Structures are given as C-alpha cells and as structure tokens.
Length: 102
Image (cartoon, rainbow, N blue to C red):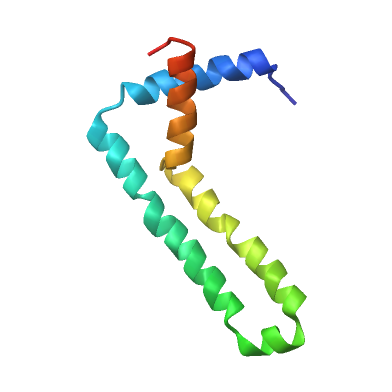
C-alpha cells in the first residue's frame, strides 16, 4: 500500500487546487450543482428509512445503524460522478493559494 508523507500530500493537493482554479467557471458551477440532487437522494432515503414506525418502536438502534449505512451512498455517488463539493474546492484552492501555485 502506498502512503504519502504530509509534504507529498500538500504538494498533490496544491496541484489539484491549481488545476481547479484554472477550470472554466461554468464547468465548476455545473459540477457543484450536481452535488445537490445526489446528496438530496441520500437524505431522502435516510429520512424514509428513519420514518418507518415499526422500527422506531421495536428496534431504534437498528434503524440508526441502517441510516448510518445508507447516507454514505450519496458521498460515493459524488465521488463516482466526479462532482465537486464546495468544501473540497475551498480546501484545494486555498492550499494552492497558500503555496503560491495559482
């Protein structure tokens, strides 16, 4: 298994930040808009799982476990579709700015 040192990780993150900073604004905007429906789907499935009355009365721990397993599906869909979360863009671009790469 390959592991990066902290210095190598900062270098990779700053390279990605530079790449994202030079990306056309419309592409960045569309990639960010794709996140909403994906996370919305995961939240809707989680809420519908939490709303079943039988589980709430008879197995409240099981319903929380199932919800905890279902919600990350939205994050997996974001990674697989190539969408961008605002928090990741802030991290990448700030790191590139602080390293004076952009």
